[in-house]
Image (cartoon, rainbow, N blue to C red; front, side, top):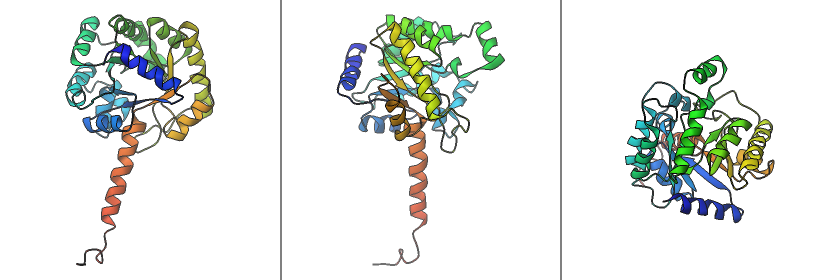
Length: 279
């Protein structure tokens, strides 16, 4: 699916008063189920593979594999099974071993409709983040990647972490902006430290306003931190203006999977001797 068609669909969804929902998929079955459930976007990136292997999503920021190659490998599992939903690639924009414009061309040729910036140094703070910025692995490279993707008519849906990044991504041509509230809470490998929903609403609003000041047509979603369940997303949308949806990764594949498998096993283990007697 091309960018024009995908973007028109998203805008039609917004115009109809329905939320735009993006779904992270770490496996083919996750992508298939997400499409069946009505996802507007499906995004694949290295953390999805780690998350569905039972590791925390932040594994995607560490040196456990080539993030961009993992996405290419995952494409063979996900792209053939998704029938009519735009699929975005999570691109490590700071990758020093990729000629980025050529890599984006490769992703388009594989069948991706667009990109997102993940892994992202935006999740890193402190002295380590400062050192990354000082040594050529900066968030600016992620902005540059989004600009290159837009030049190739790929749909762009970057994460941002503050108002300056929101404005810069809007200026780079982002179609969809996703203010990121940090590692998702809940479940067996979710975060324990997070913002409150009230704090998240205020931050999402500030980033939305900064982006809209640059591009009034940008579509803004919310993601991460305490926004883990449908009621959490409902709270953010009800307590912000102009935020029109939610992107869930752990929220739409890890948490449901954990609960469903556990509940199914509990049900099997609850079979009693009486149940096993012939009818």
